[in-house]
Length: 121
Image 1: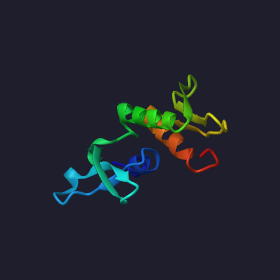
Image 2: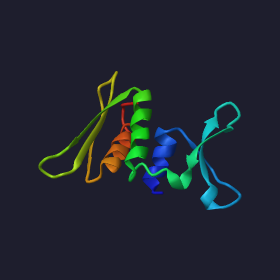
Image 3: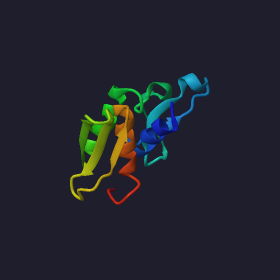
């Protein structure tokens, strides 16, 4: 799991890391409970299994989450460079930055994270 994957899990998905006493292989991403500041007990997945920067099915979980947050996506393949171009646009403010990467999952992750570093949120 990369630092980008960890940032996506916490900043975009809204998950919290639960580190198991049984070792790193059992660490999980869970839904935090805002009232108790603990965990709801709902396990989303094992930390080692969530790799949205490399796995397209995990990246599309990010796309779905961004839709829930009020963004829509533009994703296309550049015919000139062969790179993926991704942009999330906030439906209300129409802002969003474009990210380009050779891998579609990474372009999705970078574009989603970029939305939370500017005035789009």
